[in-house]
Image (spheres, one colour):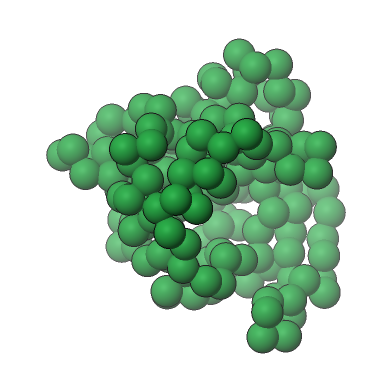
Length: 155
């Protein structure tokens, strides 16, 4: 596996991964598919993007991770192709993400995870994020309350 900086040329592959995760439901607060232009702007090279990395296996994108400046903090999002989770992709992406954020002088990263996203909660705990807040009333657009857990990683 190769983990490297994401580029605009990765937008289509990154979008396919994100939209596959959205379609499955249950592990992201994103509820509607995104276009490659939206993914590029929001997660690759838009003005709020602090870091964006992509993981490739045999030249094919299998995951990506982006950190954005949001609400005066660095917020992380991680997405791995369904069926390939829990195989070390997230940890490898996080190593490069941390290196980049340390170089920028970012002191910490926030992960806001749906409370019903057990794989996501396990992933962020496994790589060292700690709980800092809970939002039990976080709801999806259809009104379902799923809650949210906010975790922090100090760089």
